Amino acid sequence: MVLIRGLGAFLAVISFAVLLESPKRLIPYAGITGMAGWIGFLFAQMYIDSIVVVAFLSAVIIAVLSHIFARVLKSAVSVFFVAGILPIVPGGSIYRSVYYLIHNEQSLSDFYFAETLQIAGSIALAIFLTDSVFRMNWRTRGGQADRMSNF
Amino acid sequence: MNEHLLANTAMLAGRILLVSGADIFRVEDTMNRMLSLNNNKATAFVLATGITLTVKCEKETITLIERVEERATNLNRIYEVNCISRDLSSRKIVLEKANELLLALEHKIQYGEKLRFVSLIGVTFGFAILLGGDIGTCMAAAVAGLALALVKWILSGWNFNYFFRNAIYSFVITLTSHVLYKTVMPGIDFNTVVISALMPMVPGVTFTTGVRDTFNGDYTSGMARILEAIVIALAVSSGTGIAIFLVGGRM
Image 1 (spheres, rainbow over the protein chains, first blue to last red):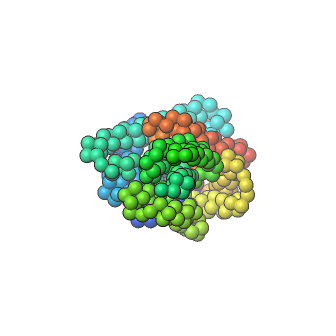
Image 2 (image 1 turned 90 degrees about the vertical axis):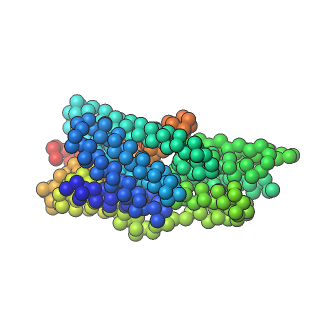
Image 3 (image 1 turned 180 degrees about the vertical axis):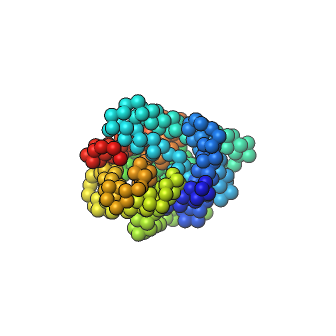
């Protein structure tokens, strides 16, 4: 089941990468990034209750993979990250917040609204942490590549 | 060195990057690298909504200002501008050639209308699988994705602002899903269908770039982009909200 859902993530991410006009040869890697992040999400969800922690771990997996692919394939981090993050973007929470708002269930609506902000925050934190770590690593080696590495 | 051509080329590169959704640090860095070909003093200053650039020559100062209106993420253009600017810095190509390449790149689209159409459906279908929906739900999500692609195609000639446009998209999706649920496919998971179909519009990309900008120290642009993401999220939710309200009742 996890595998099927992972493949769903792969399909969603490569399709999204096409919509974002990613360079052709890099699209499969974006798909792998997204799939790995989502499978990590599903596994983490089995052991951890807090959705914020789960989203954070998953975002870290995606960010680290994006950095690695960017180095190996001499490309940019965003090509992989921006598409790969799609599965954990809190679209569902936004929708549920509105849904319960219309159905006049204020507390549920508030809960999902807060969840949206928390997931967005944990994605932000994951980006920040991985960017900082990888940039540090790169500076020590220095050189022209540093400029290419983070966009 | 032709300073006017240099300024125009750097501006062109900056504009392509900014319109394609690159982060501010990247835009300024690329422009400054190009401008450093000129030994005089030159600076680029970029905000999320516009570019300023000034080059000091011997007798005059060239200053260009450009306002950027339409933005759409295009990773390939970001990637190629970077290649061109690096080739230029390392003197592999001359300035005239770089200008020519950038002009050709400005409107380059890799994937055709049909492929984008199919991809949109791919996103919604894949997302329903990813959320663990059954076969019927995934099919319904694909149909909702088709509705989204159609309404996008129909409205593409109209000059709506982005708030209204996103609200209409999400309204149509929610309504389509509701009709499917009530008529052809009563067994589907309505919420999963709507969430899957809304996914291509959720402003994850803008938000991510905004966060990057903020952490890079470009606070003005970072906040502008995060605000843009919030406004789009509001547009999408208001469209969905109105549709749910209109069809009424529990689903």
